[in-house]
Structures are given as C-alpha cells and as structure tokens.
Image (cartoon, rainbow, N blue to C red; front, side, top):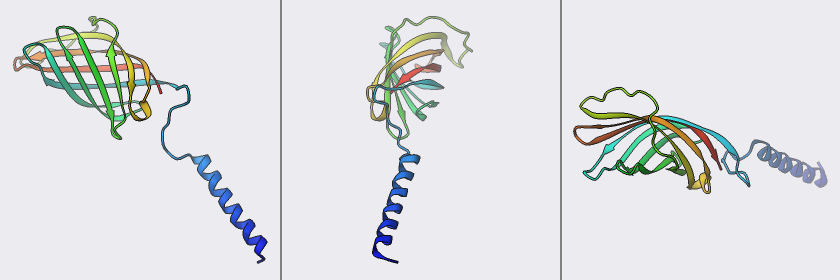
Length: 167
C-alpha cells in the first residue's frame, strides 16, 4: 500500500472517530446558553429535630427529576415559616429554593404516632441557583404535603413537588 493511501486511511479513521464522538456526545449534562425549561417532579419524607425557638434542620432521601436519587435538606423556623431547601444530586450538583408564598392548608394529613400535630400545607418556592449543572438555575416549585411534630420535638415533613427548573 502506498504512503498516500495509508495517510488517507488514517485521516478517514480520525474523521470517523470524531464524528462518532460528536454524534454520541460525551454523556455530560450541560446547560443551554440561555437555559432550558424542564419539568420538575419529586416527593419524599424529611425528618429532624426542632429546638425551643422553632428552628429545624430536616433531611431525607428522595428521587427528583433531573437529579435522580437526591439528598434534601431544609433549614428553617416553624414560627416564621421561612426556610432554605437544598437538594443535592448523587454527583454533588445542587439547587436551592426558598418560599415565595405563604403556607396555606391543602389536604388532609394522617395522625402521627406520638404526634402533637400533623398539618397539611401548600407553598410555592422559587429556585434561586445552584452548583454544577444547576449554577444559575431558576424556576418555580409548587409543593404540597404535611408537616408534623411529635412529643420528642422531631419534625416530619412529607412533600410532593411539581414545577419547572431552568438550567
């Protein structure tokens, strides 16, 4: 085989490999230049202690669209209904949300064993950013569920999220 044919064959192999990578992608999720609206769904149960001032830090595992198996941490105060929620994907990417509406009653909640109360709620949250692929993320989450306190001071929050995330 002549030297020119070997060179052409090498170029063809290189070109085919490059086209294959471009066609298949790298498998890494990345944000569109101006972000893309994506539906967001998830549900779960969070638990954790409260203190005498109503401060709490609850955590739990859930499955969230665009994150998969997710650790959720919500830090807030029962008296002010303020909180910050941080959701962390398995790869460490996070997004953060805060309430933008008042808590309103929504559904019926079952009694908790040793419970003082278990109250239904509805709230709207705004996504205010994140890390990794969620850096600069925005969106809105409509959340319903129940929050209950037991006699030992442990808070249990159940939730169902539906909304949109842009990243």
